[in-house]
Every structure is written in structure tokens, then in C-alpha cells.
Image (cartoon, rainbow, N blue to C red; front, top):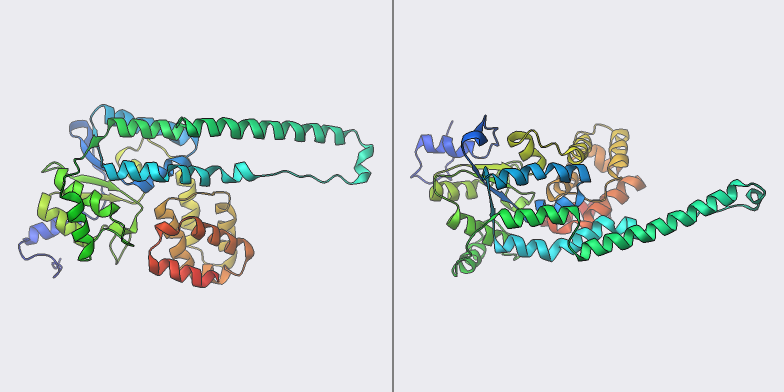
Length: 352
């Protein structure tokens, strides 16, 4: 393998091979039986917990158990916690909006009034409306009390995680990084740069880092399934260790904790894969019809859906279909912050 000319000359050929391997996520046989891992979970992944069903949230208790047993050191920053708290209500609002605003307004023609079933229907509708009011009220109480099941999982993560020190110079270094154009970061937002500087400062020497994010700011410009080459080089020069990169929590669990089965995430991923691989307008419409049942997507899923809409001709040709166009418009409108400028411009042009 030839060394990338962009790599510093101080790296030997063996180091280049070592560096190249850091962009690949590899399962570690019996790794957790004898060692522990340093794990960083980005805010966009934590916020996606509000999209998981109750069974998947129960599965995450196994991850909490691994943290409690010190098999995992979960690395946290003030930036991660603050960003989560800033965006929590908005994320929950997106999750429950369809429930809160849904209405059921059946029409009964006069001809139906002679049948006893009409009274049963009206009584059932009354029970539905009462249950709807009760359900939304209880959810609102738990949201305010931060007592949703996802909230309890997050609380455990934050209480058990290792808080990285935000040094007085961290913000200055993050600003300098952005000022000279170094990743990560976009749109004059310093959050990713602050997190990266904290990780560089505080991650123990000699320890590999497991990194989960759906944010494209950390990805290679050539392949967004791989970590940024610039950041990998910087990390290796400072730490002499690997980064194992995952775009999705489900991928991390599948490789490192196969007993944690996130079924709802897996089902959604299969449907998105069907969209990406669609070879006809009919296939596209079928995939969109099933995806339309979901109202929330992670940052990585949003970028994959938009990339498919831009690059797959079958999806492009299907945009004239109302259901396809409405679905893509809804995904984009709710998740613009997850898209880079080029992708956002391209998908808006297709949808206009």
C-alpha cells in the first residue's frame, strides 16, 4: 500500500498502515473480557434515544451495565451535556407532534342513523378522545419532570460517564481551529471543535477511542462511512492509538455488544437501504411508503436518505410522486441542521 502524500513525513510505513486501519470498525473478539474501552457518543446519537421504542430502550440498560462494571468509560464534555439539554425539548416535540395534533373526525351519513352500530361508533370515539387527552397530559407531565424512559437512560449515561475537563484554553484552541479551516465544525459552530479538543487533551494515552456520531463534520470528504483523514492523522500524532468509527449506535452494538438488539433501528435501516439501492420508481415508492410511518431519523439516516435522493436516478425520477416528495420535504425541513450546505442546496433544488 502506498502512503498518502498528505501524511506527515514523520510517520513510518508501518504507522501509515496502522493509521489506515483506524478508519475501519472491527469487532474485537473477547475484547471486553480483559480490557475496557473509551467511548464517545455524540449529541445527535443521544437525542435519537427519543426515537427508540420501549424494547430498544430496555436493551440499552445492558450498555449502562457495561459502564457500571467499568468495561466502558463513557467520555462526556460540558458541550455534549449542554447541547443535549438545549435540543431535548425540540427533539421530543418532533417525536410527539403527530400524536398531539392528530384528530379523528368521522362522517356519518344520514342513512346510517337507523343502525344501532352508529351509537357504538360515537361512544368509541368519545372513549378515544378521552384516552387521547389523558395520554398527552401524562406524557407532558413526564416530559417536564424529565421522566420519560429515554430521559432515565440519558440520566444514567450522564451520571456514570467520565466528565472531561474543559481547560481555559479549550475555547481559544477551538476558535483557532475553526479560524484556519480545520475540521470538525461547520457554519461557525464551535461545538464539534470543542469536543475534539477535549478528547485530544483528556483521552488517556495508549487507549483506542470508540467514536459514535452521525455528524458529517467528522467524516471523510471522499467517503462519509469513514472518519476524516485529517482528524485521524492528528489523533495518531498525539495519541499513537486507533479510532474505531461508527455512524450509528446500532452498528456499534452489533459489533461490540451483539447481545444488545436494537430491533426498531435495524428495521428502519433496512428500509433506508432499500431506498438507497432502489432500481425502479416502484421500488422507490414502496420504500418511501414504509419509511413514511417513521417521523424521526438520526443525523446519519437523514444524510443517507438525502444522498439517495440526490444521487439515485430512480429516486430523483420519483420526486414528482406526491408521497415521495412530501416525505423528502418533511425529512429535510425537520433536519436541515444535519445537512451540509451542498447537500441542502441540492435537495432543495430537486424539491422546488
